[in-house]
Amino acid sequence: MAVAVNKRAQQNRQFTNVSLGPNGEWWILWEDDTWNHGGLTVECEDDLTRLQEDGRAVRQVLFGPCETFFIRFS
Image (tube, rainbow, N blue to C red; front, side):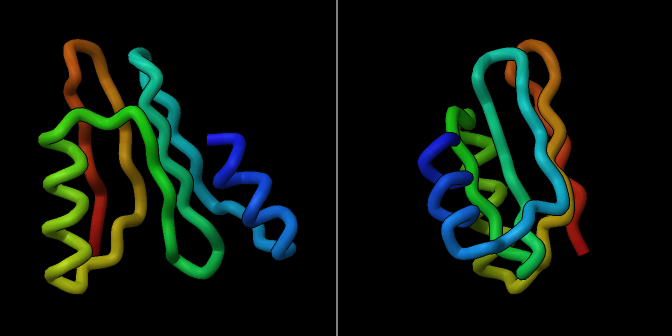
């Protein structure tokens, strides 16, 4: 996560949403509506990829216990 944040900070970009999970998962939404992530389950990463391919805008990812997750998109 530090690499993604440092790279964007050097470009003077701000983040608008950050989520941290109980098993090391993380997701960051930047002001330009791009995002970075790490430590995700295969299922979560697959869902994010599908949404991106469908042209959906992911607004928030929340992480819960037992590898559960919630994705808010438009």
